[in-house]
Length: 119
Image (cartoon, rainbow, N blue to C red; front, side, top):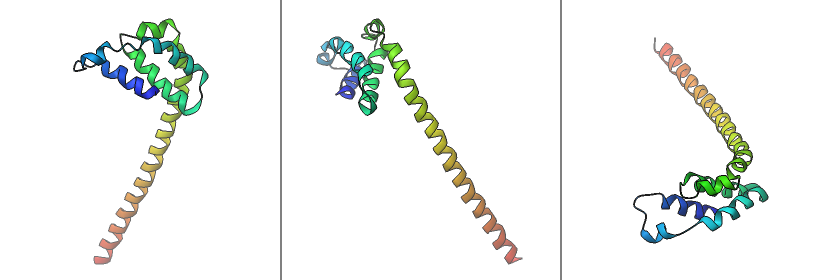
């Protein structure tokens, strides 16, 4: 549900949003999601963090998120998750690059050997 409400909030910010969506008021949910962000753990907390982030990015709900110290909660809770994901992505990139580099070098050596055999 958190991702759904986050998507609705994001859609409200678009110029092409339908009038019914623009009239939808998500402000009663801001306090609930900020509170849940602090209480939940794991995937649920991550999904709620995405929702609160989208609410904070909306000029319509930003001040309410600030008043509830949602920015601080996001910083304390989501930042370590994002850093962990970034570190893992960098590690995977190094592994892929290393394997790709090894394959490339092996292919070059095979090519050189075959050329030497033709001489």
